[in-house]
Amino acid sequence: MNKYLHYSHQSINRKDISSVIEVLKSDWITQGPAIKEFEDALCSYTGAKYAVAVSNGTAALHVSCLAAGIKAGDEVITSPITFAASANSVLYCGGRPVFVDIQEDTINIDPRKIEKRISKRTRAIIQVHFAGHPCDLDEIRRIAKKHGLMVIEDAAHALGAEYRLSRRGRRGEWIRVGDGRFSDMTILSFHPVKSITTGEGGAILTNNQQLYRKLLMLRNHGIVRERKALMEKDEGPWYSEMQALGFNYRITDFQCALGRSQLKRIGAFLKRRREIAALYNEKLSQLEEIVLPVTRPSVKSAWHIYCIRLKDASKRKRVFERLRDSNIGVQVHYIPVYFHPYYRRLGYEKGMCKKAEDYYRRTMTLPIHPGMTDRDVHYVIKTLKESLA
Ligand SMILES: Cc1ncc(COP(=O)(O)O)c(C=O)c1O
Image (cartoon, protein in one colour):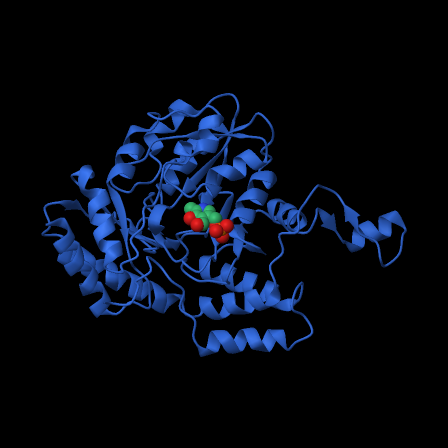
């Protein structure tokens, strides 16, 4: 039997390990210089002005919502086809997630359906670049501007994804997700299944200095230590102030050393993910029974996951089980967030987002990650074909 093929998996090499060891042997294993070095590397890779590295992607979402000013009674629009954390972050702040249905091709939030769900209480849109395929960034920005809303990109799947500008004057220019020209903040996750890993970890990117300051403060208990404050308060060199109820969402220096080393390898990671996606696309395109993932010509996906859809939803469970029995780590991304019992208890009902629900009944994630060989990919293709028969 083939070795177990995870749907996604980290790739750690000797350089990654030695960069972690180097920091472990240094004076600073947390709150030291490796954190800023990783943040600077994230800025130069994405084009963002500021980066704040935190303990995980969920913490990044939480502090982004707080920095955006989300509070009790506020509504935030998001997609139901995402990991629960995208919506949970709104609940953490006392707000209410409002789920808007998806586009049938990209599985991303459908901008045409956003405006109908905007109310007097709406404060922000959290768009999720599902599977690494960027959302309609400029259209969502346009809607948000018109209604005075903040825009947060949940780019947990999409570090390395690119988006082609379509507006007059800049037509054709490619930008990386996280560059931030269409949003207020972009969040990243460095969980081992993502584009790069720090074990657990996340970051927020922004071009706004005020938001950057707030995010730094919220990461560290809401405490600030500034020279200006010291002088004004006429205290001493020990002086610091807690100005908001923040958290300990700090990441360690050795995690950031790993992150920085991984970021140097992201080009190779993305190349391999794209090769595998192309191989699946080529070899699976003749199969009548399935619908392949769509990539619009205006984007380059980061291919965090490769999700097919079965035309006959009733076959999904059987095919899934057969693949699992063959050591293929298929998954389902995602159960619509509002299907979860916790959300049902909050009053969310099934039937709200028809396209998302139909997608959920048919979808299955095939393995894709840089460590897979062509032989692994062909094994998945062959076993899928047999399982569909
Ligand atoms: C879309 C999305 N947002 C947020 C997160 C949360 O990231 P983390 O696991 O680093 O907390 C995930 C993690 O899987 C995710 O897939």
